[in-house]
Amino acid sequence: MLNKTTKNITSVYPEKVLQFGTGVLLRGLIDYFIDKANKKGIFNGSVVMVKTTGPDVSEFTQQDNLYTICVRGIENGAAIEEDIVVDCISRTLSSKTHWDDILKTAENCEIQLVVSNTTEAGLQYVEENVTQGCPESYPGKLTAWLHKRFTTNQVETLVIPTELIVNNGGVLKEIVYKHAQQNKLGDAFVAWLDEKVKFCSSLVDRIVPGKPSGEEAQKLYERIGYKDSLIIKSEVYRLWAIEGENIEDFLEFAEADNGVKIAKNIDKYRELKLRLLNAPHTLLCGMAYLSGFRLVKEALSDEMMEKYITILMLTELGPAIALNLDQKTTHRYGREVMDRFRNPYLEHQWLSITLQYTLKMKARAIPLLINYYNTFDSVPQYFARCFAAYLLFMKVTKEEGGKFYGETEGETYLINCDSASYFKTVWEHKSAHEVVSLVLKNKELWGHDLTTLKGFESNVENHLSNMMICGVKDVASALNVYA
Image (tube, rainbow, N blue to C red; front, top):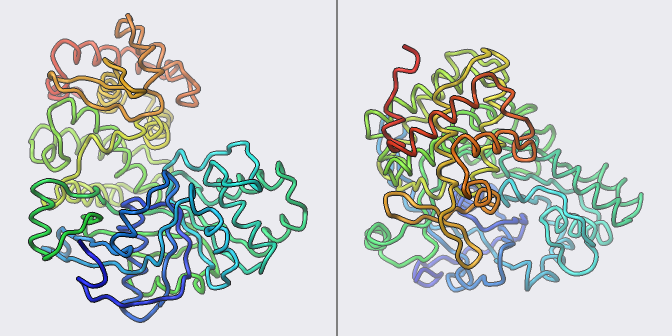
C-alpha cells in the first residue's frame, strides 16, 4: 500500500488551497498542477481536500493522502508513459464528520484559493440555514466558510469552480449572494464579498477515466512496484483556463505548466471543449454502449463509428458553436479530440460518461441543437440519431433498491441519472411516438419545447422505432443521410 514510508516522501507544505471534491478530475488535473509546481520549488503549498459525498475518508488517510497519476498518451508524436506520486494533499476531511475542522481552515490566512468540482448538479441553490451545522449544498458550504473567514481575518480570497457549466464563477457567486441574503448575514458581509472575494469562471480539460481495475490495475502495480488503491490514469493533454484579471498572485503554481491559462476571456476555450469534446461524449455514450462498445477507444477503432463521430463533430456540432469560430479552428480542435478519443492507453468507459446523462445533454448538447436550427433551419441527422439512442438507453426495465436499470442484449446496466424515475414513467406502456413526443415537449428538461424544431420530432421518432426493431448499430450505420 502506498504511503510515505514506501515512497520515502517527506514533503511538508503549508496549507494554501481548500478543495471541495475528491474526484479523479480534480486529483488528475488541479492537484497535478500544484504538485508539479511544488516539485519545481515554485508554489510550496498543500491542499486541504474536502469529501462532500460521504463520511469515510479512510481510503485517503490510509495512504497518507498520497496517490499515483499514470499519464499515458501521445504528445508531439512521442509516446508518454509517466508515473507521478502526488504528495500535495495535506488532509482529507469529510463535510459529514469534520465540518468544524473545515470551517477552521477559514482562519488560516495562507489559504487564499478555493476550488471545487461537484458536478454540474452541485452548482444549484438549495434553501437552507448555512449557519447551523453543515449545509447540504456546495454553495451553502462555501457561504458558511466565507462567512467564517469574514468573522475572523477577512483575508482576500479567490474562488474558482471547475464544474462544467457556462459562467460557473458567476453562477456560484450569485448563489452565494442569495444565501447571504436569505440567511440575513448582513450588509457588511456582502460588502466584504464585493471587495475581497473574487469568483473566477474556469474550464478544465483532461480525460481522467478513473481508477483502473482488474488486470489493468495489477499491471500498473507491477510496473510502479507498490499497490495504490487511489491510482488514476490520465491522458497527456491538460488545460485549466481561468478567467480573470490581476489574479496571478493567487496562482503562483501556474508558472509550472503551460496547461494553466489565465485570460481576460475564456469563451473560446470553453466553447471548443464543451461543444467538441463534452458534447460528442454525451451524445455518443448511449449510442456507442447500445452498439456493443464498452470503451471509447473501441468505438474509434470501428470504421463506421469513427466516420459517424467525425461527421457529427465536423459538420453538425462545429458549425453550431455560438461563437462563429472559423472552420479551420473547429476542424483542428475536432481532429485533436479524435486523437484523444483514440488514446490506446486509456480504458475510458462509455457507461461512466452516462452519469447524469440528461443534465449533461441539456447543458452540453441542446444549445448546439438550438443554434444549428438558428443557423441552418434543418434537421441535424446525426444528432437526431444520437438523441434517439439516448431515449432508448433511458428505457428503464428494472427498479431495485431505489436504483434504475436498463437492458441491452441480455445485459443489465445502471441508469445513473436523476431523471431515471421520470423515464420509467414515460416508457411504461407507451409507443416510440408517445415517448418522443412527451420527452421533446418537456420544457423542464430542456428549457425549450423541442417539438417546435422543424422535422426533429419525426426524425427522432423514426430513428428510435428503427433502433427498437433493428438495433442501434444498424441505424447508426445508415450514413447516407445527405444523399
